[in-house]
Image (tube, rainbow over all chains, first blue to last red; front, side, top):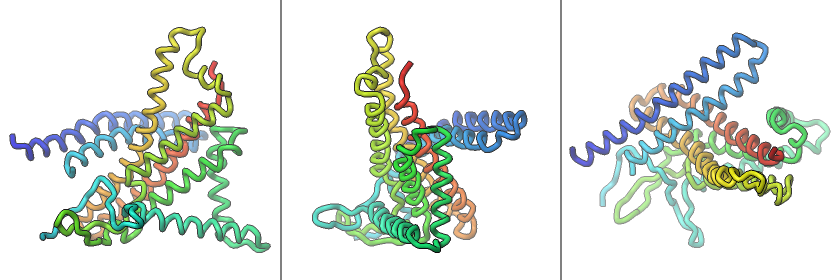
Length: 75
Length: 250
């Protein structure tokens, strides 16, 4: 394996492995939020705000992986 | 000398010129323009607030500030008045900087600069929050101010007691971890904002290279949303950390 090929593999694997956990996390957050909405439709604004905040946190982990992947690719 | 015409993506902001020995980077240049627009808007608002017949701009700004106040009020309650200027400035500053990075021309107007015997083309503008220096500075301000407010509200003794208590030997271990987590907050703040905005820019560039027509548009809308959400997340997290910092430990 030449260094360039290793670099491509590293880039692809970083983002691929790094986005598994955030994807599961965001799915769980979304499903729980919908569940909460079904039980208590009046609380929609509060649930939406909390859900978006929580999703932003879970997404941040994927973004870290993306930044690392970009650094490997372009630096 | 050769020229590069390939996809240009740079992690760090690049220097475009020097002023009195200071390097002016492209992200700083855009942030200066945004700063001027922001100041101008503030002056218009101030001027209109003195008039008898106020313009729609005045009511629009009032509406935004009012909704922000209600948002922060839901966390801070009666302490909102004291912290509101800081938190609202965080929100509005980050929001405008994020959105300024999406204006047409940002990242696409190129400048030829000689660098190590090679002519490289670098963008004249770059979103300020897509520069790690800015987000790091914002993160340091946010975390250190929350410590400062904790000392101010609880006194120095109360502040130390949040970490170490003599009655509780375990706290010497946990307190040290808490101190480390305060520092890690800076890093996570900085990289969350930087990563989101920078990744957004890279996404837009790559989409434009793949399919030059129309397809960028939905991603542009997505980036508007991401910019708003990141500004909201940054200011809401600061709010939550401050509200935790200024309450007494039990």
